[in-house]
Image 1 (cartoon, rainbow, N blue to C red):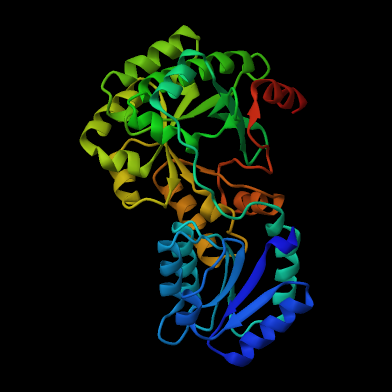
Image 2 (image 1 turned 180 degrees about the vertical axis):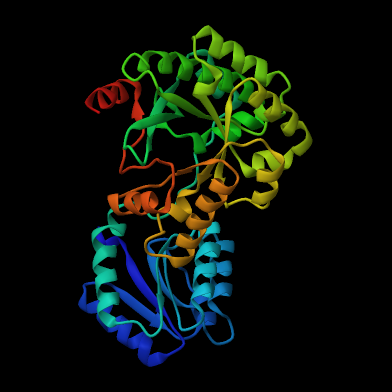
Length: 390
């Protein structure tokens, strides 16, 4: 797999560029280097070129290089380096990732060469063994999606959320998947926006809620205290009929409203504030819980906490997964937990990938955790077995 990838070092210091090139060649990489960003941008750059990019460059800086590559739809993975403020490196990483350019690592000059050597080894063993670049999404027609709904091709997977203090399963998040007859399992990022655009979201939501409540009823045989979290969209929370729909579905399955948490993003609320506040208030009055998802990634987080009746704050994986290696991410996690406590809200951290992160969250007083360290999303049968093993 390594032969499919190459490295390009773009650094304003000729000696530094040459040194990094020699190290990479010694590690078995095919390497090119340059100190001229203008010349670099004039050549063809493959998505399998790992670009070691210094942000401080002559004539054109590293940020402009990222923008130019993204405009050409070249989504090559990056190793960002700079002797400038670490906050600028962090900001450049966010910019690159927003343009769908994977950032493998950021290095602040001067850095130990052993660190660069170790990084190359990790890239060789991990990143080059999987697809780094997000390919073009498959698109589906309205007719295909209508047929999938009619044929019950959408299925549920469940990821547990644990009480950090006790380690016990507290809830499950219901995650919809499309069991496509030819493509296999299709994930929601490939079809949710299409379903919304085609005006089919109410039909899908009704199907998802019914299936999840029916499954929860069966899971409660093993774990009576188990709750359910379900993602809803902006279209759902501006539908004045939605609270009654959800109450009817929960009643049909003998599920109490306070066993169900609805997760919605900040942007969903922000786009239709007046209508959503109407629906959200009525949902809370009926006994359902509300969780603000992906907290900290939207544009008006504090406004949403102030105006909408949320009782759970879900800390985005962007911060949780990096909290032990990124001081700024750690600060954000701490603030989210403190904010939750002060506003009498429970806090749930997603993206918990190892025991060290879980232990740190416990020390910080976070209430709940979700992530691959606890369990990956599981089908109904898989989750039933997992639940019995706890």
